[in-house]
Image (cartoon, rainbow, N blue to C red; front, side, top):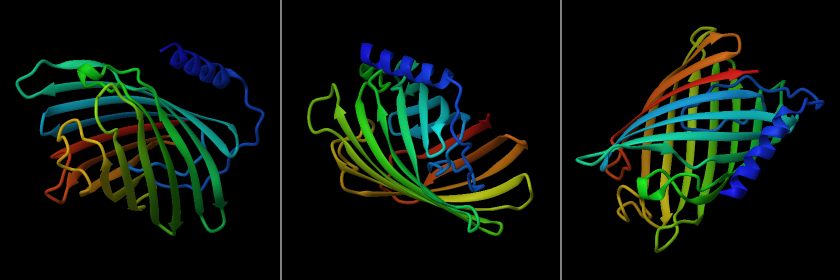
Length: 261
């Protein structure tokens, strides 16, 4: 816990320093619901999800502070809060595992409107495992790219998560994930989108389904939209739905509000 506090404090101090780096230039791309973005920017991202899974219902609230000290490097600090309501059990609520993400610009072509980035995210065990609020140390490298072709936006990403330390006994969890998003600028402010994601539990067990999902592909579709409320503020909403019998949840309502600064 002391190491976590030191890391978070250092990050806050870094963000408090004025930035003399060259201003980051980005391709204008959609705000997906289940994918990362290849954008380097200063932003506050507020999220909420409500999931119906085999063990009950879970609501997750999150605030992520994204900041770029250099035009090709972005740091993101994620602060989650989780509320779980197991069927027939006692409601649990509290802070989940804090995340720290480093993202690096890999390619950018403003004329052709193409941009790609990669990096890694580290989760710290600030949540309580006994209360189903996390409690694991994990690392997740990722790649993400996007392009705009006229009014059509296309984005794809891939990630692989390793759980490095967990209070649970047995094999530690490893999970692979990939996604594709397509959006269309219907108006200057409204953009409907559709996302396709696949998840595979490579090793370990899932907290809600045990080992039933191991080495089985899960497929999900997420219809949704972006609504540009103000010049620097974008609202996004969608519903993630499984399209196979192999599934982690029945549905997942997703809401986000991105505020650039």
